[in-house]
Length: 288
Image 1 (spheres, helix red, strand yellow):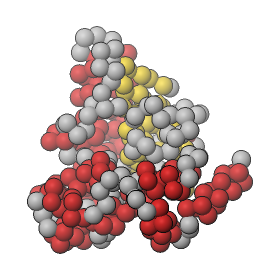
Image 2: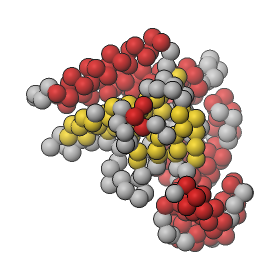
Image 3: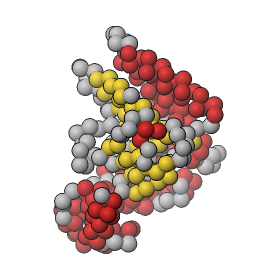
Image 4: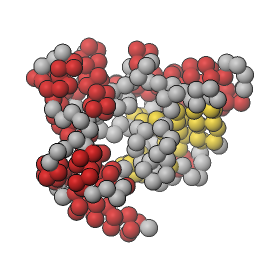
């Protein structure tokens, strides 16, 4: 089942995919014009999901938040239920005070999150899914408002569960988490130009040491490691999915000296950029 809502005025889009035999997202090769955030639920046994060329185990009855720019595919797409929406339909940044997911559920610096659903939340989401399906069929003047309200409820449920499962409470208090969420979003918006912790610390009116202390409570990565990880992730994507040279990618990511990017990439991945591209190309060819 594939259900779609498109607002003719705002171009806001909400898509619901339920147990389809074909469901994936190939952002760089095919879907770049579609800027969708995705909330995917594995509604069957454990399977494998491939995200940006890396395979992960996707446990049964688990929610997986996926970013706009991520390429992904599922071993068993017919088990997946997925909600996808663009900024024009519901901007999570503009509504962050309502849902508190920016910089955590989406645009966060934690590892890929697989958020487990207990029996109570499985029942809750099954009921919400049915209301979604019913509302897609009610084409009236308040359809957009109703769909937005239900999407907001879905995001809040998943965010609450994610915080319980991934945050070190109570040491990471709400005010500290808000600083980290703002940092993560700022990195997402500025990583191509700003590579120093000092820049982000200045924007947040915090010292680099304070940020480091907050991140130690969160996931034990340093702020600099978060910035560099985002740079390297984009470098990997550009190497895997485009024909840009390593030098072009370095400049695209804000490095005046291409060798500095190459050294950083090798330090983080164990590969020189050209070797990484060749290794991934060989892997894809073998898979085909």
